[in-house]
Length: 417
Image (cartoon, rainbow, N blue to C red; front, side, top):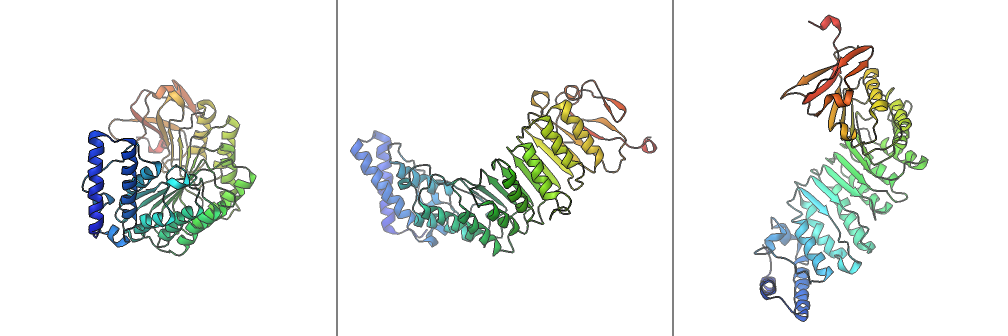
């Protein structure tokens, strides 16, 4: 594995101490001595030449058997061991989470140690997903810069990375700029999904927009609890959305519906830069608002014929009386292929869907049933959603109990046999 004999000896001594600690326990003085040995052993591991790390399938290959850090060990020792064990071998893993320790600065890895730990990422040809956890716990500016510099370099070289999760806590505009510039140098980037979590700091949204623009294959953007969508935020985010010509799906989570309506209107209404290239799939998660707020949202939908799939997840304040009919109107008024709801009507129903068949003219709806086949959206009690009868476009339909069902456009009379 390329590990020096001196390190092998030191490693064996550490294991011997572990066995003694687990078997008999240690005094406070002995624990301090053991902690220091663990500290020195791990430091040796992190200072090994990068080529040696790349020869291993896992960082666990450095150890002959599983090891555990004693609870009496210092926070820094626990941090350093968990960093190595958690990240695994960054050259051969398909998914990597970069998670700085939530201790004070002296307990985290140094910039050079982060560089050695993450450097194998640049030689990883199978990496598909990377998650950068919020770096709010890192007080060292140099350490943060090293992490984002390495990720930015990765974005500039990787042809396999498809999913990038960014927690915005602690991420400055300069950090985001490093990521954007990395993507800019990689026309072969395979990045398909960008998930942004948390409120961005001042000045970072414009760089996020450039990041979106520099990802030529980006199809899915997920904005999760990115803060209030006031006038300034709406302007910045709509400009960011407008910088992508490849975006197909937009997921918005934990935002106010009114702000979402303004954002979508600014980004995709007639006359905007993306009015002809708007997203086709829109997914809303954990949205709360008044009926008036939802009405404003559906007013945006009505003239927007580009959206073919609309999803609601955990929107518990959707009122069936006020919103359900608006959903039906949305399906009727334009070419919407599917509307999915999951955990969005409280206890009334777990999940259901509206499906529109484009072959049929808009002349009402009918309920039909499936046994083993059919839509994957389950309705536990159909009548609790629709009531015994519901009038749609002048036609009355009866909703009966069914395990699986959907609502589709009723075929014209000429097609009914």
